[in-house]
Length: 577
Image 1: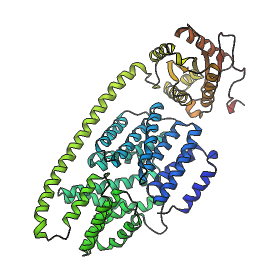
Image 2 (image 1 turned 45 degrees about the vertical axis):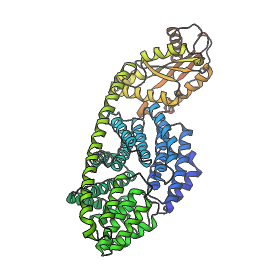
Image 3 (image 1 turned 120 degrees about the horizontal axis):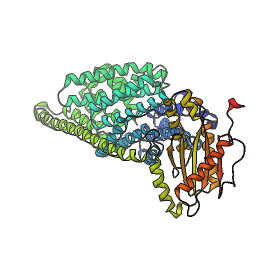
């Protein structure tokens, strides 16, 4: 369907002034584009994708890791939803996984695996999709610490989105019981913190899951359970009109969502097949030519049943045949394909006395076997989940020996090992070593609480990692001290990089930093110098920064008398002016 005028106007205004808008505006716009891109016509999807790419470029320019991660997710999802563009998502998903590992963005990393699962299903690789879903679930099974930089509500919203994307993969795999559990977890998160976009998307995805589940139950003779699933999906469809108005969904004035979105229209018709649905379903089938395979199948089955209810058996068969031919080359929905073929076989125009008894017996045998395969698939997924959990536990034990449990950064043991390694690598020279100490941290512990002090340490650790290069090692040295190794970087360039870090910490909201700033001493590694000697020199430079008032970098070249830093602090807080 065409985009609303206000959505188009907002897009045109956004393109003209992206550099002037806030981070929150960019992320809000990205969430809207995800909804627009999934539920518009092909032209609307491509327009949404172009704008999402512009937002991604702006996020990269700003250098905010969390914003970049969310925009990578947005661009990948929109490409997976657009026909013929799935392959373009591959480099974005690869970048997303690398990016989320580096910045420890676990929820977004889980979502990256879920989106990879969707890509695998588009390619017909169910085994890989199963692996990706298992990996995503294991990540989210961990005791995740909410990202204070994002805020609780935004973090919960990301978690809900990841769960919804996992649920979609499990739905396509036909593992409906586990998909239902995951969707229930998503519902809990959305109810607490989701916006209208997330709520509307969740309801549509839950409707998709229930329709597939109902068609699957029909195939093994569980008609009452199937009808219950269709009934719930129909109730969701009826509730969607108000939801979509709140969410600025792409809509047509005066038309209810259940009258134009294929999955919602099919839900009402499957719950109560009747001639009154025929005109609406036929119009949607005609106008929504580029609808996803899942929607095409459930819409065809619903329309076929309504034709039969109206006494138009020929038309019923024709609808099923057209849909079967339209998805002949599509391998992304194996379970629903069987439902479509079964529907066609059971309701073709062959004389019942010739075909029906044998066909129904064969169908029962086939469906029993497929149901057993589905049970086996669930068992396989659970086994892989257990294996992934064991692997992660082993990795966690190994990681604990080399990482600080509070900040997740490498600890002193890891620092010593890395420093010794760098001393043996000629390409690591020149090597700059910085010692970072927190100004005002003692007051946070004394006047507030150690719990708030711990949260400040986590925020500072994330900021250090986010503002430095991927090749730089940021480690917790002990207490409120950190050590940074900058291989292959001359001293002056290291000083500039660390000044950016000092600025970033000084500009953090006081609710996150509690007024803490950084004093940094940085030195260049000298020939034949060992680790203890270079750290001692960095420590002396750091104390010089403290004596000068803190909130600055002091860089020392060959000896402590040759300082590069200025006498003025790098940044003066507004309350001090």
